[in-house]
Amino acid sequence: SSQTLLIEIVSVDVYLQCHVPPLTHRDQIFFESMFLSAAVRSALSQTARQVRGLHQSAARSAGGLFVHRDTPDNNPDTPFEFTEENKKRVQTILSQYPEGHKQAATIPVLDLAQRQHGWLPISAMNKVAEVLGVAPMRVYEVATFYTMFLRQPVGKYFIQICTTTPCMLCNSDSILEAIQNKLGIKVGETTPDKMFTLIEVECLGACVNAPMVQINDNYYEDLTPKDIEVIIDELKAGRVPPPGPRNGRFSCEPAGGLTSLTGPPPGPGFGVRSDL
Image (tube, rainbow, N blue to C red; front, side):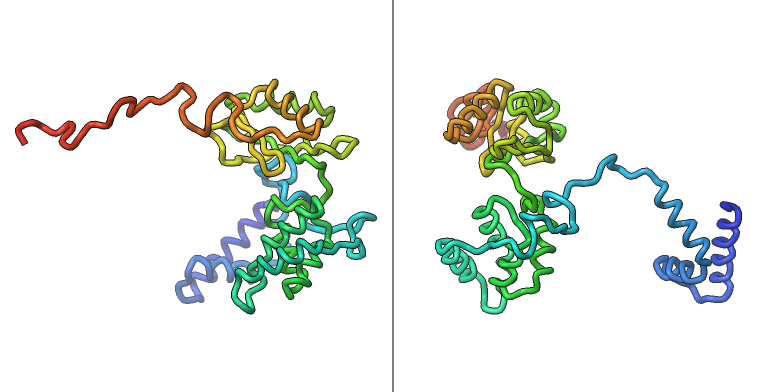
């Protein structure tokens, strides 16, 4: 019971205070865990599991689960080999690092493998490990940590829509709805023709140009529902629209024009008292 649990914890604290020299907080936690009965440790564990988490669904990590499951198109026997052109690129990448430190090239070589294949099957990760001369686990650790590495197939055009606070306040929900209606898919799905995959992501760092989406390597910013529909039509036609703001801005300057330094800057002494 909770009463028994409290009595045992208090008893351990009293014992430590009477029989053990002064302990740091960390040491006290260690000794308490050693003295508490298995029943109490189990009860504490059950209590911790009952505490509501911050997320209602599983956190997205690196395009999928941490644990690999073999499938017909993703298993150690799935063929993967760098193209001759990419083999040369791998050597160029490795030349940037000191001898004996090939592992430092894990991220750029993984990125090259993903660009060649479209995503990262486990056979591609194993090939990267072979090229770098490291244990496959060292490559798996990186691929499962960074969300830009995709460990399951995606469409030719990978749409990532930001719905974090600034974009949400600028009506990113209407952009998401327009994409779903245009493509007939929901978040996390791929169109039947394998052309488009849609996911929802956290901040992409273009808050001043909200709302925005990332499609493959390109940012499309200052969007309206009509803008995103036109972009999708262009991609369907095999044309890649120029990235950047869609409202006429060059970059991230004020949308209403300059608000300061609208004339020549004042010279030395500006704002200084005349009697000084």
